[in-house]
Amino acid sequence: MGRILLLHGALGSAQQLTTLQDRIGGVTIDLSGHGPRPIPPEGIRFEHFITDIDRAYEEQGWTSADLIGYSMGGYAALLYASKYPERVRSVVTIGTKYLWTPEGLEKELHKLDPDVMEAKVPAFAEALAAVHGKERWRDVVAAIAKSMTDLAHAPLLTVEVVARIQCPVLCCVGEGDTTAVPGDTRAFAARLPNARVFVLPNTRHPMDEVDLDVLVPELGTFWG
Image (cartoon, rainbow, N blue to C red):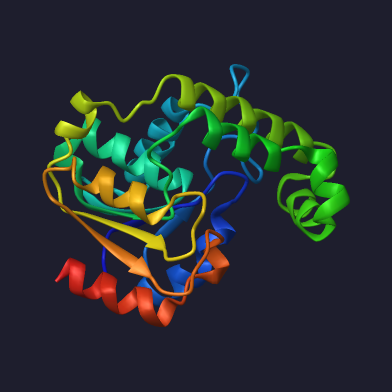
């Protein structure tokens, strides 16, 4: 499909999107603080993700590309499209949480307790250790919890930022996603100058629940 950059979600890595990459092509990267990438001294921040995207463009020799982001990666893609509209042909977000409330933050932070993870979802904790390292996966979880807290208290996709996103945007969300939430996704898409929503049937938040046989044809239609 050409110049496509795929951006993983919080606590993920480039591996999270390789199955999708196999279907549509493109390039996946590890965002700062994830996988083998060290956590920056000031924590995991979206400004670092903007730099990560810039670096990927430079390495590929791209002047423009289509961005696909899962969850946190979708938020980063939209911020990049706002900052560099001439460099982004389109954005696709999958399961991205755009709107935050104190209740929503508390719910997400409860999921980001390493002790709770090990007790209730040990397989997930083991998977995080495999991706980020046995000695540092807890630090990655703590850094993401801090990043989410900062984002909830000071959202980056402000009215002014959103108004600068002129490229076509496809906001994908699972029918049963209780993190991104279809209603919130529709409300956010309505604020964008050129966006539409695609609801994935029988799908919750995890990327591995997304039926690529449903998503990939929709991407083809969107890109035209």
